[in-house]
Length: 253
Ligand SMILES: C[S@@+](CC[C@H](N)C(=O)[O-])C[C@H]1O[C@@H](n2cnc3c(N)ncnc32)[C@H](O)[C@@H]1O
Image (cartoon, rainbow, N blue to C red; front, side):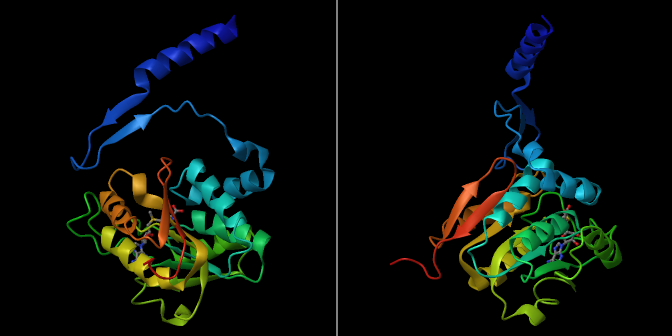
């Protein structure tokens, strides 16, 4: 009886709230909140993820859907050569999660964590919300403390400054299997992608955190520009991620 009532309520909510329009910041970028029919939550069967997520959840702005996707993507990179890099670290939540999974895959691989630690930069006319300086409420020390809690301090290196121009020189010759871009603005995201893409192994993965986020429409525009490049295969995951897989080093034809 109880179950029947719950199911009736669920159907009522689905019917009426399934697609709730959110006022867009720009008419070209519609937004809505969806109640999905897909409810499978595999992270509950993954105790290692749940333990790690519990440690990082207060140090990240990223929800469990996207965190679990980062976790599962990194697990699959065993046979792709290279290190991992995150640009846009803030308090270190997603960086710690990626570093922790990377240590399970191969403890010899480095994880580079790159942030200004004084907030968002390079906001411009393509950006609908960010003006510069947001997310400055963090520090290198706070990030290092989180890495210590997960036992990955040896594997990570923090690069402070605007990436790439102020902080990438020491890793200019590195090769990467994975790159997480979480910088909120069009130009920052573009500069990071252009720096990392020639250094990315074939079958390497680039994740744009901000693709579906209200207020990061500049990053959504950038993703559509990159999607025209035949060297990259795009998954638009409506959890908010845009995931690119590198198919080749040079364009076909
Ligand atoms: C939304 S926060 C990152 C959130 C984080 N990944 C998490 O787990 O919640 C965005 C960060 O990007 C950083 N940032 C933006 N542009 C940057 C750039 N070009 N170089 C370095 N850091 C940048 C900001 O300082 C800010 O800390």
